[in-house]
Length: 273
Image (tube, rainbow, N blue to C red; front, side):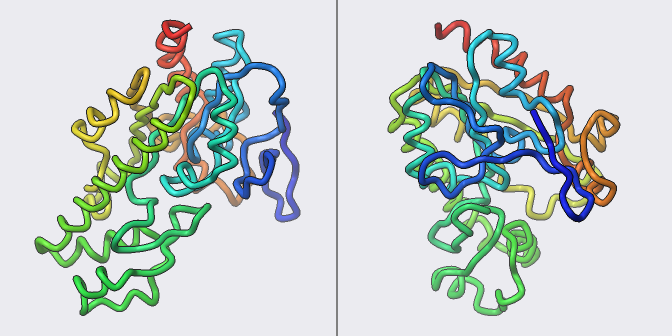
């Protein structure tokens, strides 16, 4: 895996695009002509600031080509709506799909950016009617939106939460059903220091066991892994980043976490051979 020095002094990973997709995937570009296992997902699958994301570790463990289709800030919308990505996954002999954050999806109440699903674009009329006292003009990210809504401390927030849960199941379930290859779903729980030391504003809408069970009949296997970010796990010194990127690197998972994910996936993937 190669890196280049950006003009700002940052270390950046090579990225690439396949076909007509507007998503940027972890590079370098790999040939699609030979059989491969596809690993799709967001920032963790991409492996920001690490030399060997779990897809690369899997390739070594399994002795099978494992292509990394992880994309930074990819949520439900980018994962499910990019037709080129779906085509790539349908060329694979097996797919590992990281389950996306529940907030990064357009729904009845708000719209997100089609590729950077962490970005809030606009409220719908339903959201403005539900929260007429809120001015959404200065809201740019979905986590900020959740903090704003949850801060009202009333029953309206559960209406939003239920819509997100229902929509998430429908979208992810539809993707899994549409894929031709067996699908291993990766339910990755990332522990962050802020979640244990601060009130859980914006963090209460999470993937529940009931949501996982709704997807189980559609998938070949579901693998659940819990890891910590590098700021908690003392892996920061093993990561690759520029001086100004340390705060971001502390919020990402490190090399040992990626090896743990690969270790958890090896057995289930071998069982499907």
